Amino acid sequence: MTNSEFPEHDDNLDVERERALRAGLEDYELADEDISLLSGEFEDGFDNAPQEALPVLAIIGRPNVGKSTLVNRILGRREAVVEDKPGVTRDRVSYPAEWAGRDFTLVDTGGWEADVLGIDARVAEQAELAIQLADAILFVVDATVGATATDEQVVRLIRKSKKPVVLCANKVDSQRQELEASELWGLGLGEPYPVSALHGRGTGDLLEAAMKILPEKSEHGVARPTGPRRIALVGRPNVGKSSLLNKVAREQRVVVDEFAGTTRDPVDELIELKGRQWIFVDTAGIRRRVHQTKGADFYASLRTRAAIEKSEVAVVLLDASTTLTEQDQRVVSQVIDSGRAVVIAFNKWDLMDEDRRPFLEREIEKDLKQMTWAPRVNVSARTGWHVEKLVPALERALESWDTRIPTGRLNSFLGELVAANPHPVRSGKQPRILFATQASTRPPRFVIFATGFIEAGYRRFIERRLREEFGFEGSPIELSVRVREKRRR
Image (cartoon, rainbow, N blue to C red; front, side, top):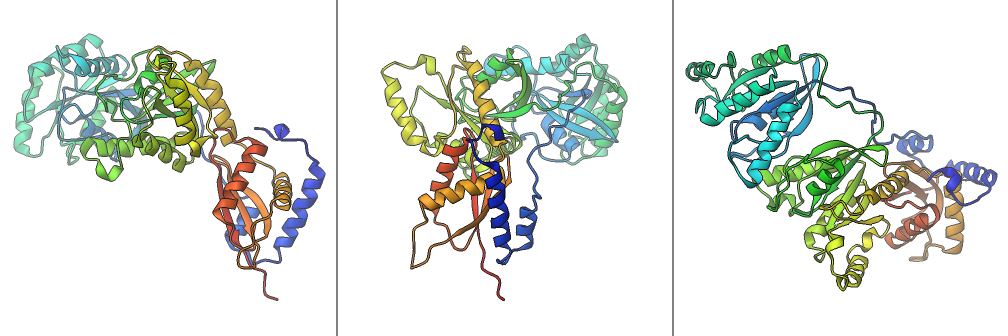
């Protein structure tokens, strides 16, 4: 909401009131952080600087050869989900990477297998797409096993693509194993580079070789223009997040299966909707409390939390065909705690029985009462029904998330509010609001200076009236109170 959209008000009176209240604050003990806040020193959230199209290096191989472990080694942090069993990675996941002063995009993939069905077939399709969309390929083979028939089929895929390739002989932890790795010359891809992705052995030489074949300019990398807003798709497992991403992307960008928990790593995609570009991020389903999860699910839940923190607005996907679950409530709480803007999307609405809808409306009022301020959209991720209605809801939520209220207008509003509805007297004392300012946006954070403690119920009253006066549809509001005493003369 822009300043011009606020209710009509006398700006001159607001300015005079702000000056008088600021002057009055000088009689109170203020900390250094108070002075910084009152001088307008604050930072708002995100860097939307444009990104150039970087060359793409795709890591390819059959399941369980250590591709994601190698990704984490190259990135220098545990970014990709890793577990000691095959099939943990399923989608092609892109990460910004750097080596020896060169920036590039690193793509992790699920394991490629031939003649597989179901989810494994879709994982293999994503790996094949990664080959097509790469500028160079890093082919990983388990040196302790040697070249298998599946490895040889992957070699044929790579040769068919005519992409430059470096051969990584992984799981080489000793000089004796280096001799075994030399047998991989037989694959016909040139020198095998012996590496231990787990311990870091030999990764420097491998990356130097990769940088030699990786072109300076990309034919396949995607440039990120200035300003696409980041949208995290969140929800419990199997609620339709990946289907929704594929529908708005108009392609099979991520693996979808009836098996719950298909997505493990957050997958982001630049998508154009209604003439505007957005970055949609598919996330792993939030199953239960993080400390109760194990293995790949534990790390997937951490990645989901990080993806929410990096996003600007979260689309919370709920299943309209079932009642809200404890997991749904946990997703909602996690998004509110993150401070992101929020849109609620009810999936499978088109399949819902007419008799069910009135009951669902009552359930929504009861179970989502803490998010009555979030815009709601009813969609079908499978068919694309009403998906376009996401855009105006996203725009409203982000506009609220970015809203700044002029300090004079804020204090005039609070003055009128307190005069009409004063804080209750407790133990013979009534706290007085001295001054208020908006500390930041994204989300809107307000700081109130007062002579005493402001009760939680009165704070909720102030928040509710802030929403009624200034909107904030789709954005959480953070309200804090600083109790300050008069200076001693």
